[in-house]
Length: 437
Image (cartoon, rainbow, N blue to C red; front, side, top):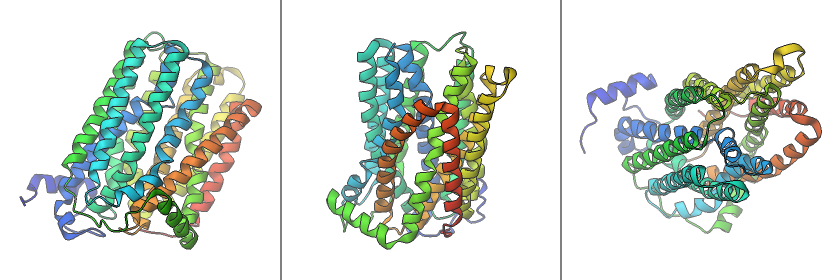
């Protein structure tokens, strides 16, 4: 096997702060040898995935798409639950299947290719569909895209745990989030030049770039040098469910983690409501999507490396701090909506709060991903990730329905107070988690 190029090793050591690229923890000697090269393959794959996620966002881009093609307004409320739950629900059923495969990266590759095809279909729908039928087709493609996302998600974490050592994984995810945030910022800046809400052509271009991002993700995943893993223990879906539930009863840390993760859903659920407040109360269509994409990209670019480094030290504290920031953001957004005078008549105060909440949500995602990968053993990692994601998907559907009903009753500003309480509870439960790094 060829030696890793010196320049690549030095760049790896600079990015991770690691003085010796051969110092590894929790991975095999062969995987340790390949770690610098695999670090950059993971980095590029994650960059493509994060860029695609931002440019096909169910919180921002797809609502504008439904508006542009004249779909019924009620369809907008289905976007986030479909996007999140569709990706999470099937994962426990995939875990047993993956156990039969010595190299799990090929599951990741298939998921990336399918997501690329779905994004390309959405780009076509932006140009060639309209009305309720067009909206229904968008939702149908989103279901397929979300299921493909779930396929990639579980395989990604399993491959990450096999190829990148502990105390390097958060750093990797942090750098990928930063670079993707910078590119997303540029895309949003271009959209701000539009004098009105972006039209079908602009949305189609965004979705085509998302398709390219997932194609890059699949290509880089195929290039990762992965050891053959244990193939024993593969089982059918229902056995996976039963074994996973048994593990949750036996492993109190895993149960505690899932309670914290469920409460941290408040950060994801609050984002579209803050964006909705900005749009409703400012009445601005002029470049509104571009403003929010720029804010989201800038926040991701600044936040991810900081959260990543902290997650490698204590992912528990990252989840705690992100929960506290999310609670403050929810309170601040409600306060802006209630403020007298011109405070609530422009999109910018909401955009600032939205950006800070994006920073908090980045911490939630990095913290929980790093925590569960570090908490689980090598043999149980895929099942732990799959079961946790499936439970979260179920909760997303249930809580999403409850939140929608509360929004009708309390309004977006009142709902944000409820989500602030959930975020505070999440911070309190995360504080009590044990350290796993």
